[in-house]
Image 1 (spheres, one colour):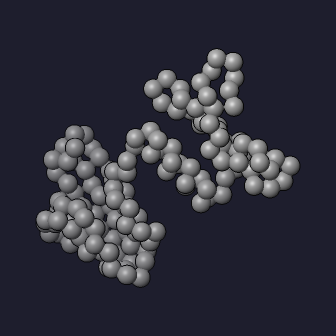
Image 2 (spheres, helix red, strand yellow):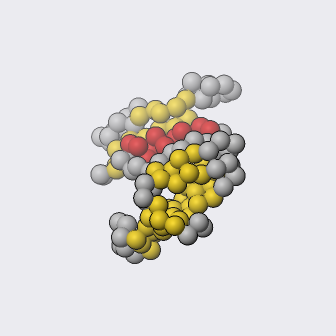
Length: 131
């Protein structure tokens, strides 16, 4: 697709069924130094997650924390240039090693390289001097 002298429009996904089957459901195009996306329907949670991850990847944005599986959730909180905190929750039934360093505020001990997160456990790691 293309409109007049506008930049090309890319079809990222199409409708699979219904009156619009085969028609564009998600389109995008370069816009300035970035990209513009248009989503013409409500996406399933799974498809929305894939779209957002693809858009972030296209924009060169990488996660601040590593992905450790669907049952492990991490959150990064930054305060100024010199301090951050990582919050980790393990909703799964297996132990997970979290690669990080800092000070574990729940167990009151230094973390030199990793935190062992048991099933159902949480960790809060303070990182002084973090970017």
